[in-house]
Length: 240
Ligand code: MN
Image 1 (cartoon, rainbow, N blue to C red):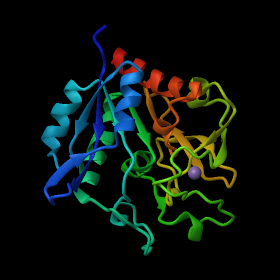
Image 2 (cartoon, protein in one colour; image 1 turned 90 degrees about the vertical axis):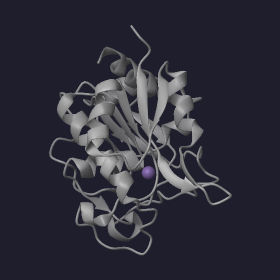
Image 3 (cartoon, helix red, strand yellow; image 1 turned 180 degrees about the vertical axis):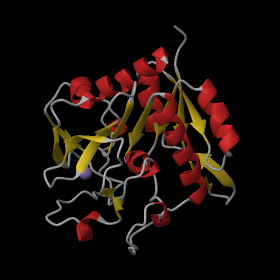
């Protein structure tokens, strides 16, 4: 079987000289390489034709972390903390998820990617958990210094495919997000919950591998449970 090639969504920014760049934290690429895949960046701003061409050639899609989704995408409540909105990135990632959901192309969403999967398929988000989810615990640990801090537990939905892959019923995870799933998309089932009831894992029943997690497993690669997640994703991509 040829080595699976995994497309990873990336962000547009600027380097120190002010020149435009396309970038992604290397931890995501390491996670895919370590699991036996070849990582390849998908830039924001590509056309829907490009998305179609990418999906024909790539074996799997990793929807990565990043800024907030435009609230217009889901009729979200405006909030002053909404940050890092990139309409071109939203467009590429939504097109990828919608096409991958239909075609059965394996995909994994992480953090922002979890939120993209939910919203692209018709779900909504809390635009700031602390102000909108009654009884919310702290989810927005500092994203520069606490990437590996195990902030809260999650409880797996026992019958979920995600629980089967992770092989655990409870897990401690990092938490670097201020938004989260409010209403789940119709095609999506919850697979894990934080102690305050927030959905931290989701999956698409019947899909070869359509899953997303709200935490950041790419920073927890020393955990066997995390390596099982990336391993199962790359393995599913290899069968596509
Ligand atoms: Mn969390």
